Image 1 (tube, rainbow, N blue to C red):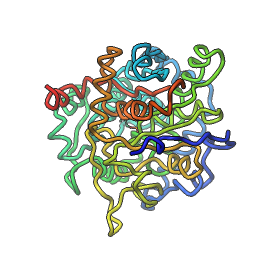
Image 2 (image 1 turned 90 degrees about the vertical axis):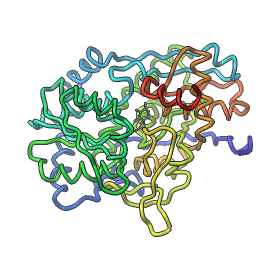
Image 3 (image 1 turned 60 degrees about the vertical axis):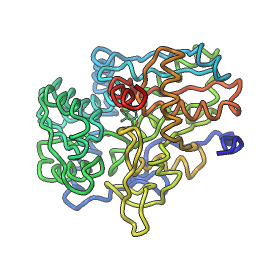
Image 4 (image 1 turned 180 degrees about the horizontal axis):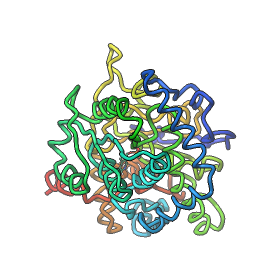
Length: 400
Ligand SMILES: *Cc1c(COP(=O)(O)O)cnc(C)c1O
């Protein structure tokens, strides 16, 4: 990759981006509700329930109180003096790694669990890949006294036994998704199939800004707390200004969407970073999967292709529809990094700042590090989506 290709266009401050989707649940040409007829009703019920809850100050207050007293919000903004010196770029980290359960996923899950409770649902069903969203959902289910079923690909169950045990410890039932390749996309399929049969009593707690409307919108709204806090915190640090660049890793795209909401109306450049082996926006084509239209990795026959990345949390062949729209409008740009760049960034942050981060957000740092010459002297806000405890065994195997 040449240095010049890192140059990112200066955004014109747009209007109307990251607002409500259209009545048919679309962001531009992307999104929608591509589900079997039996799920149209449950999706509509959820849309109405979310609209009413999100407009209700009591619901907002309950959620804010949970985020503060249970998840530990607000998460701090850390200025990285050592790293900044090393890169020649002023780096600020939004510390989602310090949340309860170790990542941004808890923000969304607490929102959805509170909503499910308000809807009178008594159980949660979820999908999980590496297990992080499954653990967060099992955590919320325990807190709310709800039953919890988590679908996980058979291959992922075998390679993530610690998270499987965590979910069981939290009282959840982990079910193996045996179809397809036994990974995340198959777990989503089976969770949706299960939801059809139990939607009366059960809420499907989806883990990212994907799936049929209202999920991409609702999950982004539950994650916007990251951007709202970061906007306020960076203004305090930057004399009322905003960072030059806001960067986040993109799997389904929820942590990126969360932090982007806080800056979409500013002149800050928005950058999403995908793994080279799962670069749905950079290398995919528009298609329909898991209920919505978005960029998607497909083979020559139009079949969904497997994503492959060092980070199981980014092993997803699609991307949330709003990111496809942000890419199409040019408001955000999407970059790819390789596994070896990610490993280097992971060790760099540990060595310079004493922070062992999740491999997912090491993707965002890998891009900053590679683009450092174009970024000289600028201020970069990086969403540190999670902590790296879950990844140290894997890294020990690689670097030990
Ligand atoms: C799940 C996960 C991601 C990827 O999901 P998004 O929806 O793209 O945010 C990123 N970072 C961490 C720490 C995760 O657990």
